[in-house]
Length: 234
Image (tube, rainbow, N blue to C red; front, side):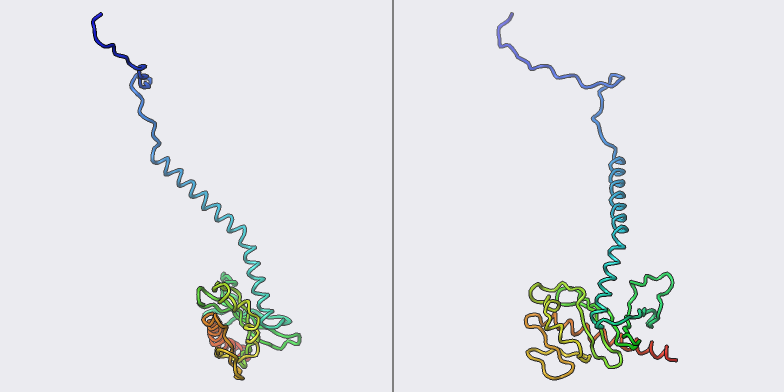
């Protein structure tokens, strides 16, 4: 035995795994097409689930939307005995929606009548930008005189505590019945003008947006209703 230091070695490394033919096996890899297929299947299933949920919930959503509209029509026309629905098609009002058309998606006018069958007014929805996002209103008016019967805010996302007073402030909303369009917004106590509406302090932009939407709605729908009346009177 010769002198020198002894060399100590760790345990020998295990031999590489061998295939049936004796060659070392390559590291396991997932083919890219399998990854793509998995992603595609997952995406398709997710999309299918979204569609299924949409189809299941759609009838309930549509029923609720219809109930909101019906309640607003009753409110702005002061509980009419009944009403007819007219559809705006190709720039003219008609009693029925075209075949194949989604009636709920067409612009509509709701013509209210009292118990004796006399027309008491027309209700229409109108939507335009407010201070933050779109404001949606239901407006009731008399086409013969442009006098408002009522107004209700259907949807608003104005600033909480300020702009949202257009919906929460009953004094603001209570000014509209009996006013004559076109309306004029005024600060402070309104005068005796039949078209003056007092704006809300701290929410001037939002309250003026309501006035603008009402003015535009009556300007748009009044001639349409009058043309319909003339056509049916012939």
